[in-house]
Each structure stands twice: as structure tokens, then as C-alpha cells.
Image (cartoon, rainbow, N blue to C red; front, side):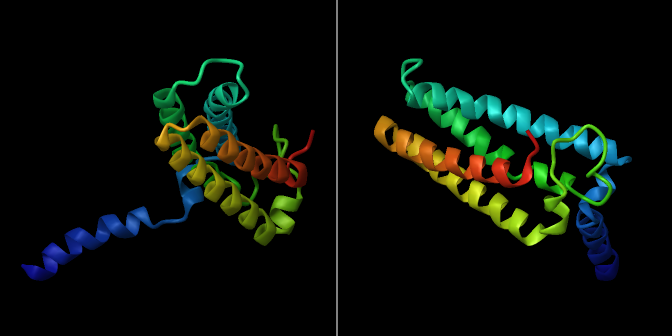
Length: 150
């Protein structure tokens, strides 16, 4: 009975740990997914930027909510840069696949800066948000400069 219970727990875990690309039926599905995630992420990041740059009034709760969304979204697109996703309608540079270590490092840097932005937004302090937004924006730009076609 214990073996059956253990098996019932292990089988779902094995399924969850399958390669990320298995969730995409076709490479173009992965490209659509990552583009969608990055678009939504940019939209919510832009809402924070509008407050940080004074284009709209600062609302601490709105900033915190959007920063939390950006932090969550920042972890999603990278599973969709698998083999075969360098073709089709994408602005991804080949360097993503030829220098994966550098790409991963840039992604991790962005995620760390976005986490700092989320933490700053939770304080409700506009100056902290501005500072963290600037650092997060620089990390995004660095990745775009290195790995995105114009």
C-alpha cells in the first residue's frame, strides 16, 4: 500500500519535471507564448514607469500590484527559448542560442532587478520606486541590446 501511495506522488512530480519545451506542440507556439508574456510584462512595467516619470500620479497600491505582476511574469518567457524557436516571426538574435550562458545571466539579472522593484513598490515610497525602476529598466535594455533585433 505504501508503494502505491509513493507511486501516486512520484508520477505527477515526474510529469511536472518534463522538459519545458514539451508544453509547446510547435516551435511557433513557444515563440507566440514568449512574445505574449513579454508584451504583457512590458505593459505592466510601463504603468510603473508612467508613475516613476511623473506622467501619471503615483498610486502606491497600483505600483505594488503592477510590480508584483512584472516579477511573476519575468520568470515565464525563458522556457520558450528552446531549440527551433530561433526561426519565424521573432526578434530574438541568434546569440541567445550561441551564448546561452550570457543570455541566462542577463535574464537572471533582470529578474533580480525586477524583484527589487517589487520590494521597493511594496514600501509605497516613490523615490525607492524610481530608483528601482531605473535599475530594472537598465537590465531590460541591456538584454534587449544584446539579444533583440530592432
